[in-house]
Image (cartoon, rainbow, N blue to C red; front, side, top):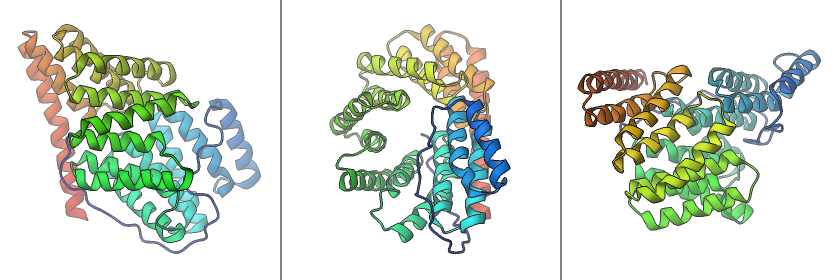
Length: 347
């Protein structure tokens, strides 16, 4: 990622609350249909009321389903609703509140909205560490997200510390690291040019995911492995994992999902680097089209793809198109930088 400036940290004001729910629980019905979950939510609302904590697992499952369907606004609204319920019921510094903060922070991270994710992730990590202990299993996914945030802003030292702590918690509590933690540590090691160790961890993540039941987790590990190989200019080797990740994501995610756009961005970079400039430009256009039709039409992700398409158009001799794309990308990135400065002044 290209955002290198330090983010501001805003801790929530808090009142100590009861620890009544497990932290960062997985959605109980991750593959249920939208209609089934909507019916369960409606029934629970009728029985318990719209602000009852009994709704939290259903809201989590609905948010998970909406994210995969690329209905990102709905996923965000559901996560925020769950957080409000948990805070109102248990207090800001309760484990249930931290659980819902962590889930919202993770959604922001997956959408590359690191400025929004960081205060939530830090607050949730502080709460869980204080309530459950510094080595609690619930901290591992939060530490992984903190590592991703640090990596995005270029703080590789902090990113490695958080990633290694997440892996260590997994090893201590369940005996082996989870693939998600291996992915982030592999990404950090790649950024530090420790390529052999990064590749070893990422291939292990792929193997763990292939042995599991979540194809989207496999896609994320394959994509990260492909990106590590791409970073080393091993373009021919990078192509297969990126193509497989793209196929899985297209099969499992909504058509305008930003993760599919990222897959096509990686494919475009490989094509461009191997002299297939027209194919690269086509892949970049596919990525941009998906983002513009979805909820990520003004994000840094779009801007970076536009910059690479501008480079491809320049190579193809389409100078007017190249300059137009460059200006559009700079407009987005300047707006993001202005927003960051505004947040820093307000903190």
